[in-house]
Each structure stands twice: as C-alpha cells, then as structure tokens.
Length: 448
Image 1 (cartoon, rainbow, N blue to C red):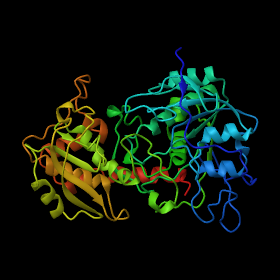
Image 2 (image 1 turned 135 degrees about the horizontal axis):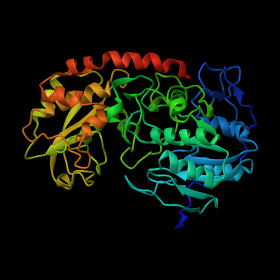
Image 3 (image 1 turned 60 degrees about the horizontal axis):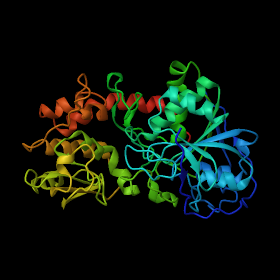
C-alpha cells in the first residue's frame, strides 16, 4: 500500500477551551436512529459564540467536549468542509482536544484535505498535522467500505461533509455506502449535521430503480430538501433494513437554530467549497437544475470558469442570444438570465468545448424563496433543444442505458418528452404525484 504525507491545513489549531455542555437525547423517533442536540432554555447554545445564530452539529459536539464520542475508537469521514465557525477542521479539533481516540480518517472524492480534482483522490497516507492514517475511500463500494472500517479498527464512523442538496452530488452516496457497511459490521454511525444550503424544500423527479448509478443510487427526488442528518435517518429507515439486513446504530447531532426556510446566506456559517466546481452558495442554488446540462454533449456547464453551473452555453457558432431572450420571456420565478460569452477551461466529458468561445446565459438567482431550480433547468433544456446543434451526451460504455441525462433525471421520461416537444408545464406535471409521495414519505425523518 503506497503511503504519502499530506500537507497540513493552513488553519492554526489551538487547544480547546470550549464551554462544557451536555448532548441531550432528542425524542425517540418511530424510525431507527438517535438525534442529539444541545440548547439552553432561551434557545441559545453553549460556548460556540453563535448566540441565536445557527450552529452546526460539529459546533454542538465541540461545545459538549466531544461527549458523544467518549470511550470509542473513531474514524472520521470528512473533507475540507468539516470545519467549525473559525474554520478549524474536525479532525484537527479532535486531535488537539485529547478527548477523542482518533484512529483514522477516510477521504472521499477530492480527498480528505481537498487537494484532488474531480474524479480524483489523495491516496492512502499519513496526515502531516495529526499523524492519523487517512484511507483513500474515493469510489469505495460497500464491500470496500467494510474492508476499510475493519482495517482502521474503528467502532464509530463520524460523518461531517457539507452537502448541496442535489441527488447527483455524490457525497450523499458516500454516506449511504459507508452506513450500509457500518450496519453490516455492527459499528456505530454518527452524523454531524449541517444545514442544507438551498433550504428544506423538495423538487423534481424521482430516481427509478433501472437508472440508479453513482449519481443516484437509491429512489429519492432530484432536489431532496434534507440535511445529511435527515438523509441518514431516511436511509436508515427506508433502505438499510433491506440492503444491510438491519439498520445502523445511528446518532445525528443536530444543528441549533436552523429552519427549513433558511438558505446558506441566512445562517452566518462559513462556506468552504465542497468540490472544485462548487465555489459559492450561489452555485449550489442553481446546481440541482443546471447540472442537467452535464447530460448535453454540445453544451458546457461552465466548468473551469469562476461561475460553474451558473454559466451555461454551447459553441458560439451554434448558439446565440435568442436563447436568453426566450428564457427571459418565460418570466420564471426568482431568476433572471444574462447573455454571456465565456471559454471553459475544464473539459469534463466534453473536450470539444475546452477553451472554445461559448455563447449562452448566466443564471442569476434573485429570490431564492421563489426559485425552483429544477423547473428552471428544464426550461433551459426545452429552449436549448430548439437549436440544431443540441445533442444529448451518450455513454458508450453503457449500451443498455446510453444517455447520461437519464441517469441524472432518473428515467427516460425527461429526455423523451423534451424530444417530443413537451413544454415545461407538462414536464413538471409529469412528476408532481411522485414528488408529493416522496414529500410525505420523508416527513417522519425530518429534524427541523
């Protein structure tokens, strides 16, 4: 096994002086899993300094002096987003505290310290700051997760990664696979919850079983509207009993003072880009809809620009200003469109567009409370489909399911309806019943 030493994070880590607190067990749920949180009688937290502001599960854990992890051998699944309000990383805080038996860390896509690009990892090695072994978990199957957890010798896996609220953002499937492995091994699983940066509403079509893949492994809707803690509870109640043979021993350490109507900008929490093409909360707002353009071979989703997933376009010889005019005429709620020209400096799966002048739009979310990203993304597809150069991206490696858009949207329905000339209202209406059913199904698992 090849090892190398990771660069130490740039944040200085001081000895902890957090005010002691107690993790109070939340009310027992009808579904498997325990919820933990800390809140004083007036609604304020302990020593994190948030007052009535939002505090993450990590902040609550630190306030409690890591009480929920006492006496356990801990392995942390995290990336650079696992920081407190002062940008100090979870693993660094644990190591400095002397209160946690920190045995291992697990690095997902982009790596534990975040030095790898899309589709990459940092490998297995020793973290320079803490001396902890970091295991490369990028692309790990459930069987591989079981092997890593066993090799690391941990009895508790702690998850702390900032999600962005979309089914195809793959950290939530890293969460799922590692939960299944922990359940099969009889290990405990702790989720340090973080707010969903795009709020608590659900939108879009359901994933169907024949089209599950790495960008959607189980049947949830496109914008799930849950925190990672709520997703973990949902997984534990709905999927793990069948797949793992049992539920996992789950604890979710809740956020304090977060409400489902809040977006990232409302929380006052720091933002650390969870992947190279998710630089800001604005990116996250648009992403559940504009990521559908990953399924269009002739158009770029702006990778390698300063506004990925907000800048969308195709070669300037093939697309023009009529697209922005037609989108503006639709008067979609909460969003405006700016005519834009740009050259993507990252190809993704579209090398023919690399460093080429592209014409398109910049998506400007002006009212997040009214904005429906999935409807907006579908409207953009409908109008873009009118250009002769428009072409769906084909997956030559998957003859049975050759279109990437079908894996992103969850079935063939979106693609075939757009090709047949359906308009936006028909497309959105086609998934309204399944969305309503999912919304009802998730309610027992919601924490906020």
